[in-house]
Amino acid sequence: MKIAELLQKKRTLSFEVFPPKADIPMDGIVETLSRLYDFKPDFISCTYGAGGSSRGRNIEVCTAVQKSGHLAMPHFTCIGNSRDDIRVLAKEYAAMGLENVLALRGDFPAGWEGTRGDFSYASDLISLLGAEFPGLCLAAAAYPEKHISAPSMEMDIAHLRLKQDRGAQFLMTQLCHDVTAFERFLEKIRKAGITIPVVAGIMPVLVAEPTIRMTIYNGCSIPAELASIFGKYQHDPESFTKAGTEYTVTQIHRFIAAGINGLHLYTLNKWKKITEILKTAGIHDSSF
Ligand code: FAD
Image 1 (cartoon, rainbow, N blue to C red):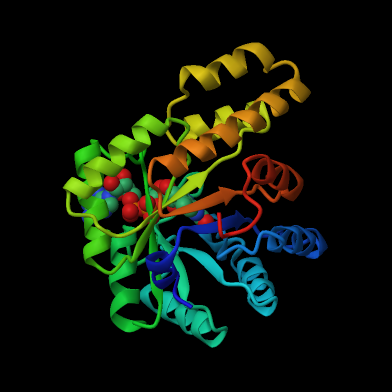
Image 2 (image 1 turned 90 degrees about the vertical axis):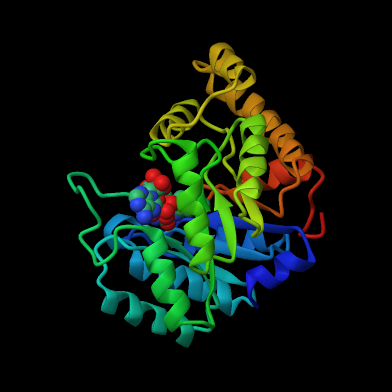
Protein backbone atom coordinates (compact mmCIF):
# COMPACT_ATOMS: atom_id res chain seq x y z
CA MET A 1 0.00 0.00 0.00
CA LYS A 2 1.30 3.44 -0.90
CA ILE A 3 1.11 5.96 1.93
CA ALA A 4 0.17 8.74 -0.50
CA GLU A 5 -2.97 6.75 -1.38
CA LEU A 6 -3.80 6.28 2.31
CA LEU A 7 -3.39 10.02 2.86
CA GLN A 8 -6.04 10.69 0.21
CA LYS A 9 -8.50 8.69 2.32
CA LYS A 10 -7.68 9.51 5.94
CA ARG A 11 -5.51 11.31 8.47
CA THR A 12 -2.72 8.88 9.28
CA LEU A 13 -1.12 7.88 12.56
CA SER A 14 2.48 6.72 12.32
CA PHE A 15 5.67 6.26 14.33
CA GLU A 16 9.38 6.74 13.79
CA VAL A 17 11.79 4.28 15.39
CA PHE A 18 15.56 4.00 15.14
CA PRO A 19 17.45 0.72 14.64
CA PRO A 20 19.61 -0.76 17.40
CA LYS A 21 23.41 -0.57 17.02
CA ALA A 22 25.03 -3.56 15.32
CA ASP A 23 26.09 -5.24 18.58
CA ILE A 24 22.73 -4.82 20.35
CA PRO A 25 20.14 -7.63 20.10
CA MET A 26 16.87 -6.93 18.26
CA ASP A 27 14.70 -7.92 21.27
CA GLY A 28 14.27 -4.33 22.52
CA ILE A 29 13.10 -2.92 19.20
CA VAL A 30 10.86 -5.94 18.59
CA GLU A 31 9.16 -5.30 21.96
CA THR A 32 8.85 -1.57 21.14
CA LEU A 33 7.30 -2.34 17.77
CA SER A 34 4.82 -4.83 19.22
CA ARG A 35 3.61 -2.18 21.72
CA LEU A 36 3.30 0.42 18.96
CA TYR A 37 1.23 -2.02 16.86
CA ASP A 38 -1.47 -1.79 19.59
CA PHE A 39 -2.33 1.59 18.05
CA LYS A 40 -2.88 0.01 14.61
CA PRO A 41 -0.52 2.57 13.04
CA ASP A 42 -0.83 3.30 9.34
CA PHE A 43 2.93 2.94 8.97
CA ILE A 44 6.21 2.85 10.86
CA SER A 45 9.32 4.63 9.59
CA CYS A 46 12.87 3.68 10.52
CA THR A 47 15.84 6.06 10.52
CA TYR A 48 19.04 5.54 8.55
CA GLY A 49 22.31 6.37 10.31
CA ALA A 50 24.71 8.97 8.98
CA GLY A 51 26.91 7.51 6.26
CA GLY A 52 24.77 4.36 6.12
CA SER A 53 26.22 3.13 9.43
CA SER A 54 22.91 1.51 10.40
CA ARG A 55 21.83 0.44 6.92
CA GLY A 56 21.74 -3.31 7.73
CA ARG A 57 19.77 -2.74 10.91
CA ASN A 58 17.39 -0.35 9.12
CA ILE A 59 16.54 -3.15 6.69
CA GLU A 60 16.21 -5.66 9.56
CA VAL A 61 13.75 -3.41 11.39
CA CYS A 62 11.74 -2.72 8.20
CA THR A 63 11.61 -6.47 7.49
CA ALA A 64 10.29 -7.12 11.01
CA VAL A 65 7.59 -4.46 10.54
CA GLN A 66 6.54 -5.83 7.14
CA LYS A 67 6.47 -9.43 8.47
CA SER A 68 4.11 -8.37 11.24
CA GLY A 69 1.66 -7.22 8.55
CA HIS A 70 2.34 -3.48 9.05
CA LEU A 71 3.61 -0.96 6.57
CA ALA A 72 7.29 0.04 6.90
CA MET A 73 8.91 3.14 5.44
CA PRO A 74 12.73 3.18 5.50
CA HIS A 75 14.53 6.52 5.59
CA PHE A 76 17.28 6.65 2.99
CA THR A 77 19.98 9.26 2.42
CA CYS A 78 22.36 10.38 -0.34
CA ILE A 79 25.31 10.31 2.07
CA GLY A 80 28.14 8.25 0.64
CA ASN A 81 25.93 6.67 -2.02
CA SER A 82 26.67 6.53 -5.73
CA ARG A 83 23.86 6.21 -8.31
CA ASP A 84 24.55 2.48 -8.45
CA ASP A 85 24.45 2.08 -4.65
CA ILE A 86 21.04 3.74 -4.71
CA ARG A 87 19.80 1.44 -7.48
CA VAL A 88 21.00 -1.65 -5.58
CA LEU A 89 19.21 -0.56 -2.43
CA ALA A 90 16.00 0.37 -4.24
CA LYS A 91 15.94 -3.09 -5.81
CA GLU A 92 16.43 -4.60 -2.35
CA TYR A 93 13.47 -2.58 -1.06
CA ALA A 94 11.31 -3.72 -3.98
CA ALA A 95 12.27 -7.37 -3.30
CA MET A 96 11.18 -6.88 0.34
CA GLY A 97 7.80 -5.58 -0.82
CA LEU A 98 8.54 -2.05 0.45
CA GLU A 99 6.57 0.56 -1.45
CA ASN A 100 7.40 3.71 0.52
CA VAL A 101 10.72 5.50 1.13
CA LEU A 102 11.59 8.77 2.88
CA ALA A 103 14.20 10.19 0.48
CA LEU A 104 16.69 12.46 2.25
CA ARG A 105 20.00 14.14 1.72
CA GLY A 106 21.05 13.18 5.24
CA ASP A 107 23.14 14.99 7.79
CA PHE A 108 26.86 15.10 7.09
CA PRO A 109 28.88 12.92 9.48
CA ALA A 110 31.40 14.88 11.61
CA GLY A 111 34.23 16.24 9.47
CA TRP A 112 32.37 15.85 6.13
CA GLU A 113 31.62 18.86 3.96
CA GLY A 114 29.45 17.18 1.36
CA THR A 115 27.62 13.92 0.78
CA ARG A 116 30.67 12.13 -0.74
CA GLY A 117 28.14 10.50 -3.04
CA ASP A 118 26.80 11.23 -6.53
CA PHE A 119 24.03 13.50 -5.24
CA SER A 120 24.16 16.69 -3.19
CA TYR A 121 20.45 17.13 -2.51
CA ALA A 122 17.39 15.05 -1.71
CA SER A 123 15.70 16.32 -4.88
CA ASP A 124 18.40 14.53 -6.95
CA LEU A 125 17.70 11.26 -5.12
CA ILE A 126 13.98 11.78 -5.66
CA SER A 127 14.58 12.33 -9.41
CA LEU A 128 16.46 9.04 -9.77
CA LEU A 129 14.04 6.98 -7.65
CA GLY A 130 11.00 8.56 -9.32
CA ALA A 131 12.31 7.90 -12.83
CA GLU A 132 13.70 4.38 -12.32
CA PHE A 133 11.44 2.98 -9.57
CA PRO A 134 7.96 4.31 -10.32
CA GLY A 135 6.46 1.68 -7.98
CA LEU A 136 7.92 3.52 -4.97
CA CYS A 137 5.94 6.19 -3.14
CA LEU A 138 8.43 8.89 -2.15
CA ALA A 139 8.24 11.09 0.91
CA ALA A 140 10.46 14.13 1.52
CA ALA A 141 11.52 16.10 4.59
CA ALA A 142 10.16 19.59 5.25
CA TYR A 143 11.19 22.25 7.76
CA PRO A 144 8.45 24.44 9.30
CA GLU A 145 11.07 26.86 10.68
CA LYS A 146 13.35 26.36 7.60
CA HIS A 147 16.29 23.99 7.28
CA ILE A 148 19.17 25.24 9.42
CA SER A 149 21.53 25.81 6.49
CA ALA A 150 18.99 27.36 4.09
CA PRO A 151 19.70 31.06 3.51
CA SER A 152 15.99 31.97 3.80
CA MET A 153 12.55 30.42 4.21
CA GLU A 154 11.75 31.42 0.61
CA MET A 155 14.80 29.54 -0.74
CA ASP A 156 14.01 26.51 1.42
CA ILE A 157 10.42 26.46 0.15
CA ALA A 158 11.67 26.74 -3.45
CA HIS A 159 13.83 23.65 -2.80
CA LEU A 160 10.85 21.92 -1.24
CA ARG A 161 8.79 22.69 -4.33
CA LEU A 162 11.54 21.06 -6.40
CA LYS A 163 11.14 17.88 -4.33
CA GLN A 164 7.41 17.84 -5.13
CA ASP A 165 8.03 18.60 -8.81
CA ARG A 166 10.54 15.76 -9.03
CA GLY A 167 8.16 13.19 -7.57
CA ALA A 168 7.79 13.48 -3.78
CA GLN A 169 4.24 12.47 -2.94
CA PHE A 170 4.00 13.63 0.67
CA LEU A 171 6.03 15.60 3.21
CA MET A 172 7.17 14.77 6.73
CA THR A 173 8.11 17.67 8.95
CA GLN A 174 11.06 18.28 11.23
CA LEU A 175 10.41 18.72 14.95
CA CYS A 176 8.63 22.01 15.60
CA HIS A 177 7.57 23.19 19.04
CA ASP A 178 5.93 26.34 17.67
CA VAL A 179 2.53 25.52 16.21
CA THR A 180 2.01 29.11 15.05
CA ALA A 181 5.21 28.87 13.00
CA PHE A 182 3.93 25.56 11.64
CA GLU A 183 0.64 27.18 10.56
CA ARG A 184 2.52 30.01 8.83
CA PHE A 185 4.67 27.41 7.05
CA LEU A 186 1.57 25.53 5.82
CA GLU A 187 0.14 28.76 4.46
CA LYS A 188 3.42 29.66 2.70
CA ILE A 189 3.94 26.27 1.05
CA ARG A 190 0.35 26.14 -0.22
CA LYS A 191 0.85 29.64 -1.72
CA ALA A 192 4.06 28.34 -3.33
CA GLY A 193 2.08 25.62 -5.13
CA ILE A 194 3.07 22.74 -2.85
CA THR A 195 -0.10 20.70 -2.75
CA ILE A 196 1.02 17.28 -1.45
CA PRO A 197 -0.09 16.09 2.03
CA VAL A 198 1.88 17.17 5.10
CA VAL A 199 2.49 14.66 7.89
CA ALA A 200 3.60 16.46 11.06
CA GLY A 201 6.52 15.03 13.02
CA ILE A 202 5.93 15.43 16.76
CA MET A 203 8.93 15.28 19.06
CA PRO A 204 7.81 14.38 22.60
CA VAL A 205 9.27 16.56 25.35
CA LEU A 206 10.55 14.04 27.89
CA VAL A 207 14.08 14.87 29.07
CA ALA A 208 15.51 18.41 29.32
CA GLU A 209 19.05 18.10 27.91
CA PRO A 210 18.31 16.12 24.71
CA THR A 211 15.24 18.28 24.03
CA ILE A 212 17.39 21.43 24.09
CA ARG A 213 20.22 19.76 22.15
CA MET A 214 17.95 18.52 19.32
CA THR A 215 16.05 21.82 19.14
CA ILE A 216 19.25 23.87 18.86
CA TYR A 217 20.90 21.38 16.46
CA ASN A 218 17.96 21.85 14.09
CA GLY A 219 17.80 25.62 14.52
CA CYS A 220 14.25 25.49 15.91
CA SER A 221 12.64 27.83 18.41
CA ILE A 222 11.49 27.25 21.96
CA PRO A 223 8.19 29.04 22.62
CA ALA A 224 7.62 30.75 25.98
CA GLU A 225 5.29 27.99 27.18
CA LEU A 226 8.02 25.37 26.70
CA ALA A 227 10.74 27.69 27.99
CA SER A 228 8.82 28.01 31.25
CA ILE A 229 8.88 24.20 31.66
CA PHE A 230 12.68 24.35 31.29
CA GLY A 231 12.83 27.27 33.74
CA LYS A 232 10.77 25.49 36.37
CA TYR A 233 11.90 21.88 36.07
CA GLN A 234 15.22 21.51 34.27
CA HIS A 235 16.89 20.34 37.49
CA ASP A 236 13.98 18.09 38.49
CA PRO A 237 13.85 15.31 35.87
CA GLU A 238 10.64 13.69 37.13
CA SER A 239 8.64 16.94 37.16
CA PHE A 240 10.15 17.91 33.79
CA THR A 241 8.95 14.66 32.19
CA LYS A 242 5.48 15.10 33.72
CA ALA A 243 5.13 18.70 32.49
CA GLY A 244 6.72 17.79 29.12
CA THR A 245 4.27 14.93 28.65
CA GLU A 246 1.31 17.23 29.32
CA TYR A 247 2.79 19.81 26.94
CA THR A 248 3.19 17.18 24.20
CA VAL A 249 -0.46 16.11 24.61
CA THR A 250 -1.57 19.74 24.17
CA GLN A 251 0.75 20.13 21.16
CA ILE A 252 -0.80 17.06 19.49
CA HIS A 253 -4.27 18.63 19.78
CA ARG A 254 -2.94 21.93 18.40
CA PHE A 255 -1.27 20.21 15.42
CA ILE A 256 -4.46 18.31 14.61
CA ALA A 257 -6.41 21.58 14.78
CA ALA A 258 -3.85 23.12 12.38
CA GLY A 259 -5.10 20.77 9.66
CA ILE A 260 -2.30 18.24 9.30
CA ASN A 261 -2.75 15.21 7.05
CA GLY A 262 -1.01 12.83 9.41
CA LEU A 263 0.49 12.61 12.88
CA HIS A 264 3.97 11.06 13.08
CA LEU A 265 5.41 10.49 16.53
CA TYR A 266 9.18 10.49 16.93
CA THR A 267 9.06 7.67 19.48
CA LEU A 268 12.78 7.68 20.44
CA ASN A 269 11.98 3.95 20.94
CA LYS A 270 10.24 4.87 24.22
CA TRP A 271 6.97 3.00 23.78
CA LYS A 272 5.78 3.46 27.39
CA LYS A 273 5.86 7.27 27.22
CA ILE A 274 4.39 7.29 23.71
CA THR A 275 1.55 5.05 24.87
CA GLU A 276 0.87 7.35 27.82
CA ILE A 277 0.96 10.48 25.63
CA LEU A 278 -1.38 9.08 22.98
CA LYS A 279 -3.88 7.65 25.46
CA THR A 280 -3.95 10.92 27.40
CA ALA A 281 -4.51 12.73 24.10
CA GLY A 282 -7.52 10.43 23.53
CA ILE A 283 -5.85 8.63 20.63
CA HIS A 284 -6.31 4.87 20.92
CA ASP A 285 -5.76 3.88 17.31
CA SER A 286 -5.26 5.25 13.83
CA SER A 287 -8.96 6.14 13.42
CA PHE A 288 -8.49 9.26 15.60
P1 FAD B 1 17.63 18.66 1.09
O1 FAD B 1 16.20 18.71 0.67
O2 FAD B 1 18.63 18.29 0.06
O3 FAD B 1 17.98 20.09 1.70
C1 FAD B 1 19.22 20.31 2.39
C2 FAD B 1 19.58 21.78 2.33
O4 FAD B 1 19.97 22.11 1.00
C3 FAD B 1 18.43 22.73 2.67
O5 FAD B 1 18.97 23.85 3.30
C4 FAD B 1 17.87 23.12 1.31
O6 FAD B 1 17.24 24.39 1.32
C5 FAD B 1 19.13 23.12 0.47
N1 FAD B 1 18.89 22.75 -0.94
C6 FAD B 1 18.08 21.78 -1.41
N2 FAD B 1 18.15 21.72 -2.75
C7 FAD B 1 19.04 22.65 -3.14
C8 FAD B 1 19.55 23.07 -4.38
N3 FAD B 1 19.16 22.49 -5.54
N4 FAD B 1 20.48 24.08 -4.41
C9 FAD B 1 20.91 24.67 -3.27
N5 FAD B 1 20.44 24.31 -2.05
C10 FAD B 1 19.53 23.32 -1.98
N6 FAD B 1 18.93 12.28 8.57
C11 FAD B 1 19.59 11.09 8.54
O7 FAD B 1 20.82 11.07 8.37
N7 FAD B 1 18.91 9.90 8.72
C12 FAD B 1 17.55 9.87 8.91
O8 FAD B 1 16.97 8.79 9.03
C13 FAD B 1 16.83 11.11 8.92
N8 FAD B 1 15.48 11.15 9.06
C14 FAD B 1 14.82 12.35 8.98
C15 FAD B 1 13.41 12.36 9.05
C16 FAD B 1 12.70 13.57 8.96
C17 FAD B 1 11.18 13.56 8.99
C18 FAD B 1 13.43 14.80 8.80
C19 FAD B 1 12.68 16.11 8.72
C20 FAD B 1 14.82 14.78 8.75
C21 FAD B 1 15.52 13.58 8.84
N9 FAD B 1 16.92 13.52 8.77
C22 FAD B 1 17.58 12.32 8.76
C23 FAD B 1 17.70 14.77 8.74
C24 FAD B 1 17.99 15.25 7.32
O9 FAD B 1 18.77 14.30 6.65
C25 FAD B 1 18.71 16.58 7.47
O10 FAD B 1 17.83 17.57 7.94
C26 FAD B 1 19.50 17.06 6.27
O11 FAD B 1 20.36 18.11 6.70
C27 FAD B 1 18.64 17.59 5.12
O12 FAD B 1 17.97 16.58 4.48
P2 FAD B 1 16.90 16.92 3.32
O13 FAD B 1 16.48 15.63 2.75
O14 FAD B 1 15.85 17.83 3.82
O15 FAD B 1 17.87 17.69 2.31
